[in-house]
Image 1 (tube, one colour):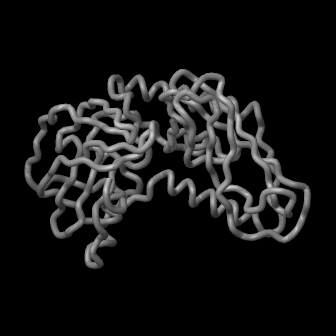
Image 2 (spheres, one colour):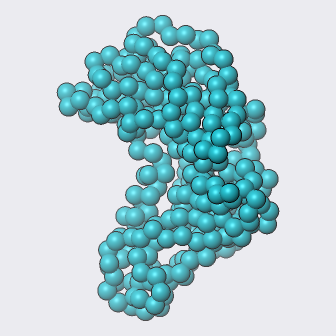
Image 3 (cartoon, one colour):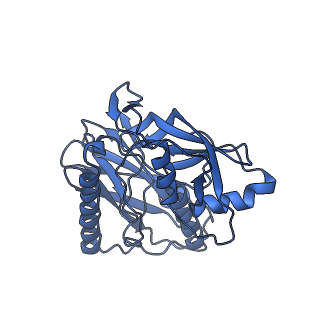
Amino acid sequence: MGGNGSKARRATGRYAFALLTTMALAGCAFAPGATDPAAAHQRAQAVLSKWADAVAAAGANAAVNPVGELTGQVGDWEEAVGDNNKRALMAGLVASANPLSEAAPPDGEVTWQDGSTTKVPLLAAQQAIVAIENTTEAPCSDCSMLLVTDARLTSGPIQTTRGPATAPIWEFTLQGTAVKLTRVAIANPVVVVPDEVGSGLGLSIDSASGSVSGTELTVAFVGAPDPGDKPCGEDYTAEAVESDLAVVVIVTRHPHVTIGACSAVGARRTATATLAAPLGDRAVLDLQQGTPVPVVLTP
């Protein structure tokens, strides 16, 4: 989707949260990493089960699994309406000022960077509005409704569990603003509600990379700023818990015992897990939130 979303993407929010957590720990030495292996494995199995249920619910649409927010915007809110419109969108206060089509368009096409394509059923314009209404993040009793005056089916970039792709997107014109509201037009995509049940069980990951035929999966996350033998340094190991549909990666911290002054800045770190079977088209799921992360697939 083009433009900045009025809602922060969950992956971005997860990154910011991890960064702040890392900074808070960075005054003297990083706190010991005490991941309970049994609890982490139990959580991973629960995440895999939840994903399997979501895939079953999506049915034929499971071939395309978008990552992150499905709703976004093109352009920035004008000062006069920005406060209301931002909060109204987060509250799902969106309605059509004029009747929109309730007939689903013909199947659309999702295209990945390697040129492969997949046909997907699409939402009707009115169904897309309803989908936006149903993704409330924060109620807003004093917000004015966002009124949609027109709808256009277009296409744009999205992130998926198979990497970046171009997909059908609904673009909505809103009354009283030049900002356009967008919604991924794929009907009934695989969606799981994020949670923090796994908080404290390893580190939260925000992306992954690997190959379809490979058994090594590298995940990225925010960690200690100093690798090696420096104070506050940490090493990391990664372990994969797998099913036929997805992979959950448990990242375990191994803090150094040296005590000393630390930089109050987190760093991008990676760890590599060995898979029991090639990655294929399986999703990679974050242990803590249970949601898929973007995957960069290499040949």
